[in-house]
Image (cartoon, rainbow, N blue to C red):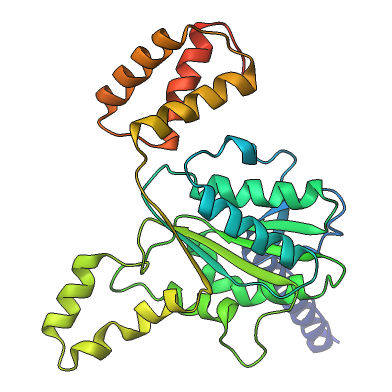
Length: 292
């Protein structure tokens, strides 16, 4: 009887231990959240640990009409976006070039325009550090066949020892399963080839086969059907951006005063861009008691 009692006790202790271990593992790696219905929002942010799509109640964006000086890129990307949102063929797009010239703003504005036209386009942002999980995200989005998804990777760049770019190929045209028909990728970067120029030159100069040394990484940007370049703006475009913000928010100010203050602001920053124009307008609006 005593031996039997000991066996029962050991069995009970073993079950308790296994239960505690299972609970600990569940806390370390919780089960992924169920996929959303995509009815509560038109934009989401992808998170991992656990995998989940977090709805964004209010997207931080500007109106399409306020994006000045990028007319060609605006028209091309908008047409591509509306094609895709309407269920037609469209290209993945890489928006590259000067900082603060509206690359990210254009993506969000194009999405807003598609929604305004009643098209079922959902914006999903994925961070560069989460690219390794993109295959799981694609599988999730592919299940929602009644929606079209614009997958947005902002400010992409890769270093010489970075392997995250390999995961991105699955979105573009790689992998056995391929990319779901209802998903398109837009990425922004300050670099045309998503990697520093000095790194490309260094690998070419030290490799046994220079042409092959960087081919794998450079070929990533080649997989985008659309390349849209953004370049530093001229002073007239910079002033036009600011005037557009003033008109949109109803700020009445003397044109000569506005011009003088705007030029002084960009001189102190040492740069002109859409971002600098917005920063100046934010300061101007605050000084005139305007809430944005």
